[in-house]
Image (cartoon, rainbow, N blue to C red; front, side):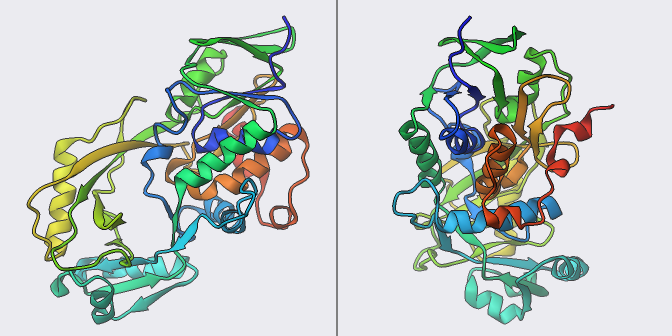
Length: 373
């Protein structure tokens, strides 16, 4: 059977689109997306925020390396930044005070501020709910759609193909080629990239591989009207230090999340009414906001590896099978650097100086860490 491409990428979210674009100048790429459009699941339901002090050390290194690429996206002809200043405000009541010390000790660019200053940033907060507060000015909004579409356009400009409604049903390795039978036909290539998000372990199982233990966790959110008489657009993302709720401006309204992480099976996620109600109650008790109605709700899946570090690299148990999965809640802000790292591993592309000189260690991301010798 003749090869359809050099590389098949399964999954058209941010992970798959960014990797496909980065390798498209060096390989013929076909991207297979199960939904009717790329980015329907987690990518399209992101909180869209860049927070340098988020995640473990590996995540922070990926985020640091991604930032200059988000400020000047490589697949935007005009290199227009997809970042916009937002800031992030952490608040703590008396019982949470020691958590502030832990946060400050582990963070760069985060500093403690007086409760009165926190109220100036977000006037709906209740003064009695703030014993301590900390603020990070470098947190940024991410234009997720523009970044994602930029990668897809870059892929197509290089001759790559995006095939939607192409859910993969069967995988097999024959004569040095992966054969992917999908709803849109059969596609063949020597290299397969598994960027299927919450379904990545299921894709591996189709390929005859043991799962890595990826865990999809549901996170819910709601859009509420802005408080009457207040302009919210310049408020920072705000939440308590134990992450039991957070809220941020969203097109002149407020997006509120209970910061839930509920284990679920891979599916087209929807919010749990009780979890969402509990999170909204925590938000209301921390603020003067009068909740009268909810405009809309949604949920997305954040998929984590067992060590909460992404999985990027060839699986030692299967020739030509490459993982790009387990991004958790950091997949948007780390995608640019992660894709360049993946491209280097996939097609031998040299890493840009900013990435080559970073503290990134490919072995820390490799799926080999989950495979016994």
